[in-house]
Length: 79
Image (tube, rainbow, N blue to C red; front, side, top):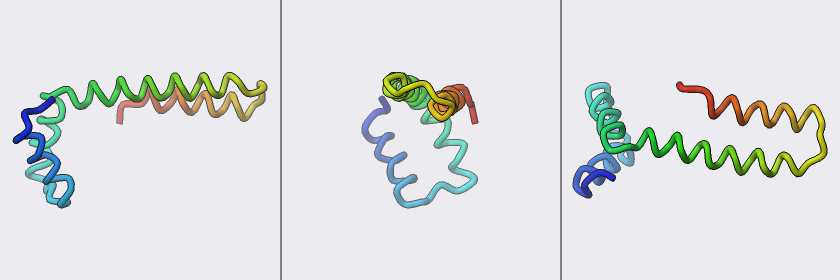
């Protein structure tokens, strides 16, 4: 969602491994400003829903339940 020039600058920082302590805050700010965090959270929810749908097709077992619990944990965690 960022303007192309800003987006390319972010890509360059990440691609080149040039994210220093001083640039890290700027990078996080840009990602938040242009909706990157919200987008990532929504994608995680979508992927998790698909994973749980696939798991539901398997016979109920403790392993299946553990995997479903792991999916829920990943979606719920914030850091």
